[in-house]
Image (cartoon, rainbow, N blue to C red; front, side):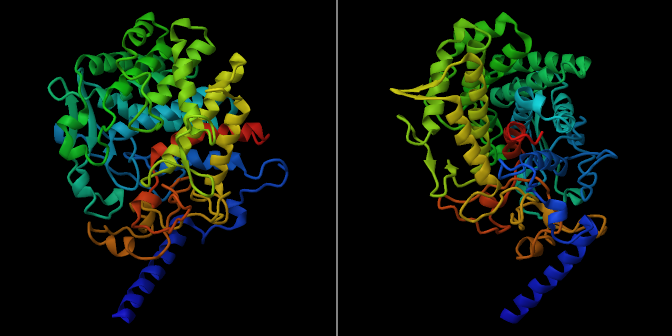
Length: 511
């Protein structure tokens, strides 16, 4: 039996090695292609510019729909071209959230908001990568406009997650049912609706100068979608529980998204209506709640920091209390600070939970850098009890996290595919792990792919720029394809990292 198992594994290895060359056109990366340490930058240990380029390129590997002629992730091909047909709507496009073939609207909208926020705060530093970042945002917003085309209805998911997860097949081969799920007046979803409104409003700011007509379309839709979210209240997972749980259940409720959505509309419209909404409803919506996790489910911390900018930089005095709320969040993540409640691994990585922990590392790093920017502009600091922390301290904490992700860790491993000499080779991702269509045109059936999924062979296709879930609380990372908690990439891990990398690339003279 042992011999047979070895032979099977060996055959899979040879099979994948052959197709790897055909799909990518080269063997495992050498320093000439993936060199990330350019010696002309003596101060910086990492090439943040290279990491920035790759962090944006990753989104091309997650695209669903008809791919454009300038698609750079060339091993990916068209997929999901009939999405939406189950309900006679056009839902072609958008992003697969992670390593599967489902389009989940809730994390996709959050990804879009965070990509847009990255560009709003740090796009001016991105130079040649700014256009690529905007293209990544627009791939999402074009889809979100389709998903919100009917008044008081939002299409929030395409694909049956349970059936999809019982297969291991390329997106190009998908043959699982492409069920369509929606929220409406009878089945409300204030969380997913308000997050979608936030995404559209944030993107409207991004495109305001470069494409004003598109920006107006986005903002008009954001206003309508937020009104729906606020009028018909409820969590989307209450009505769609069998379909969205446990994948993207709304554990934190919908109040955080209403506050977050209103904050983005206030920023995008400058309409006093949203400022008054925040003033009247802020406390009810949890402005002062003590929670120190920011991600696709809970937006309170992000809303607090966004609203604090209006107070600190734009002098909107009615939002003065948000400075204290934002400080409380920052204090909770500063190691050794009074009220600090964040766990760190022995190697120094912020650790929130075992499943896709790197999303909290990237989102928290982004908030630290963004808040540092606001504090610097207002010439002020963070107060934690009797202690004071400067914007520089916040930046140094963020840098430590980003550097850990890029390789400054006990394993000396980069957790971004394609960055550095050592990175995850067996990521939990169907398209990356199976031979590409160009090299293997024949369909790979639903269950056929599991032989490769369960093998120890490296993935044949590089999902360049993908950041995986990351190590455990003891800095261990097994690099096992079956370990989705640690080895699966996700769009919402990369989105806030884009802004952080742009900041550091500029700070170290690389942009």
